[in-house]
Image (cartoon, rainbow, N blue to C red; front, side):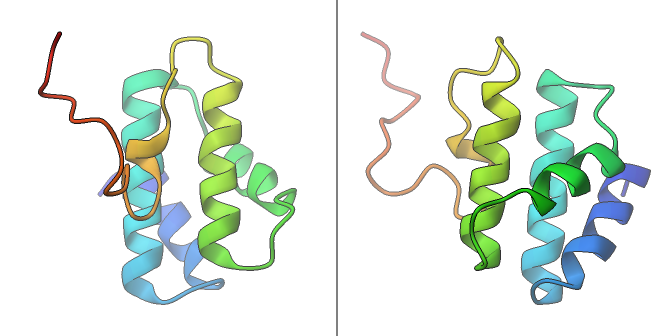
Length: 96
């Protein structure tokens, strides 16, 4: 795991179970790798603290959307959510 993943897994572990915290941390690390290599755990934790939801999953999914909205290159943040894009998402393998 990366330093970002480790720090976020620990921070998220205070909010939810260890498996969910690890998934959330890995998803943020993947987002950072694809869209924002300078993203820090401190920035993520500060943004998470601003989430308008008490439930971890909802707050985390809000966080992912907020990070994506701040990044003009990310137009779809669903793959980084706790449950991924969901069963009703378009199939990314279908092209035209």
